Length: 253
Image 1 (cartoon, rainbow, N blue to C red):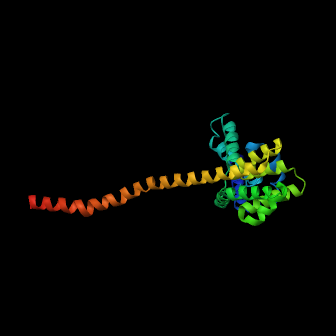
Image 2 (spheres, rainbow, N blue to C red; image 1 turned 60 degrees about the vertical axis):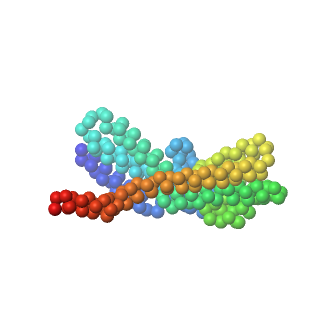
Image 3 (cartoon, rainbow, N blue to C red; image 1 turned 180 degrees about the horizontal axis):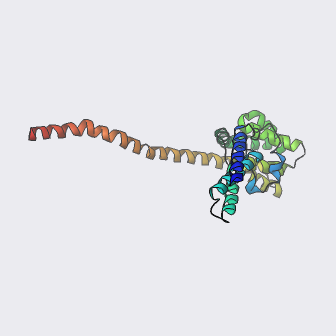
């Protein structure tokens, strides 16, 4: 029992330190790819961009497993399997979590997807190959989208196959996932890429408009409850209660 308490306390302290320490992946545009350990992991265990590092997630998993093991110390043989499962769930969940800054960056990338596709299509129609169109569009856009494209261009220039570089872009940024799938299919089959980009730009813009209309409709529905909660009691107190009180005063006064 004592060794379990000591182990849980040590792991909790290590996990808190590692979570607070600046050990997340660097922002897009500063490195060619994720750290080498993340590449060797299966897809389900691979952390998304901006998630805690492998060391932090491992420490968190060990901490959760130790706490569960400590809590179930009197259960018997069921404690260790439950602790292992809980630690694995914590490891995967931490790898799929994004901080608010990363979520804002993904929203900016999603908003930039239609202009990215349109500019790439324009460059291709002007005669540039795709690998030369990417840095040109990156310089013209800037922001998170430009940083992601510069990272893609840096990977290709360092010798990574173009299809693999695009696949890593889709793995890092879900906003580009469908675009990457269509581009890889077009490149693999020898299909012209410019029409694919034009179509994807139109589809992405239509999806953004549909999402904006859905948010507007939800806003109209969600504002009903605050109006009912705030204005209905005020109407009753100001408009109904004085009338009822006056009537009752005349009747029983």
